[in-house]
Length: 294
Image (cartoon, rainbow, N blue to C red; front, top):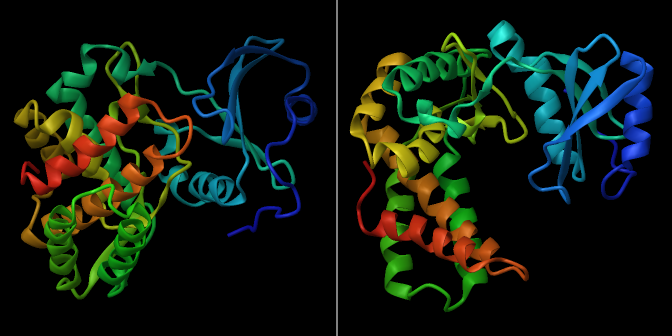
């Protein structure tokens, strides 16, 4: 595992990054700015004179760069051509240069509701999880409890105390799971990060949140946006993954849900947050205490 540069503060300039890309690929032209959170991460699509496309990503935070770089060097090689290939990286710029995978995001079409796509994604995510040996830990519940209590304290009266107490029960249940298998998880597993080519082949992209976690964490976003709407998608994904959700798995997911929900509400209180972001954050929490998971 490499250690990213801590000297730089904030994002490197676009000029610095493109100069580095030019030295790797030769002269390139920027054809698209795909940045979603440009204050945290810039993403540009570049084209070489021979017409080949690549993506260059660079981060404001060393930890975000570190996760992406570790994933691209340690885990995604096991996916072969079903994930981007690392072409070059630069610790000083906190930059990765990666190959472009063919196709478009499943979230941009009706493919996001296709059980076959979810089945294939389940197979792919299982391959990611098995790309490195699991690590067994008895600290997941304790760490979840710490994050939960920190967020609850920072929220003050923003969430009713009785609801916090209800959510705390899910943290307590996760603490009963003594040995948790942690694997390389995507942690933003969602159709927007599934790329589908014209032949229906599914590939996985965007590994900036990748870390060791329980496998069930990669069901979190799917449950919220897809499985509640169409339970057949849950069945399809789990068939592809070749695993059922046990009681302990569900306990770990509920604890993850509780932490993510409170941290989401806290983040939505930041200046500049929209009403939609605030409502969405509270909706995630309401689903937990409303017992609507699955």
